[in-house]
Length: 109
Image (cartoon, rainbow, N blue to C red):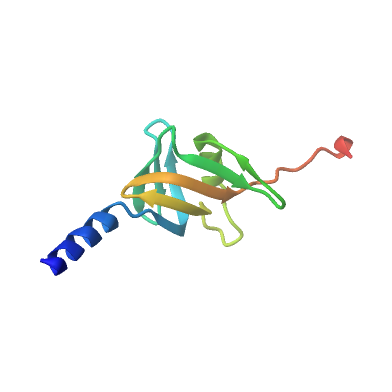
């Protein structure tokens, strides 16, 4: 009986595990609120925390900025962006990606 209870408890705990990993975003559908990371599709909702990682700090961001970043071509010629993410089942709970650091106007010195 004791073994059965331990098995049941471990199954319950493992069902709600949040996965934290790094991956490569290849597609973002802003309208359907879907993000494809390493060929797996995840949903995004209002509770998903999306942040842009800068050189010194992280800032809150949104799905549109992630979509724009995912359209960029990297140094290796591959289109997409590397992210650190957490997911519970097929729903993203948080996503962090490197900011683009757009070119500054020379008059801003």
